[in-house]
Amino acid sequence: QVQLEESGGGLVQAGGSLRLSCAASAPTFSTYAIGWFRQAPGEEREFVAVIRTSGGGTDYADSVKGRFTITRDNAKKSVFLQMNRLEPEDTAVYYCAAGGGGSAYYQYDYDYWGPGTQVTVSS
Image (cartoon, rainbow, N blue to C red; front, side):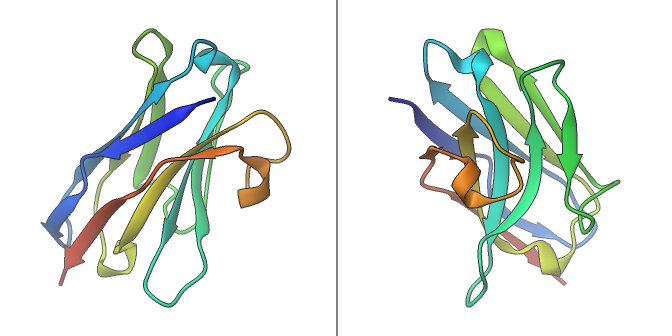
């Protein structure tokens, strides 16, 4: 069983930055791909970014590419999402998830989810 907990959300003005953290309790944390998803009110949950296990390869949604950076620290069992040049459209609840396979772009690729952290970007 893997437990995940996000932190670092909050209220920020457009153009600002936030750094989200995802802390995991898993003896084999390094074997999991960790993804970030977000869900805005009335919208479907969508893929944001993923960091894989093998070599730490990363992928991003087009909407955040060049603004967001995902990193991981296996020793601390944590994954981080640095979000720069935030836009009002980035307002959502952000979730981290742990999974072991698949493309990593879809919710069904992940087995474990955190409760989420709210990010609000004011214009």
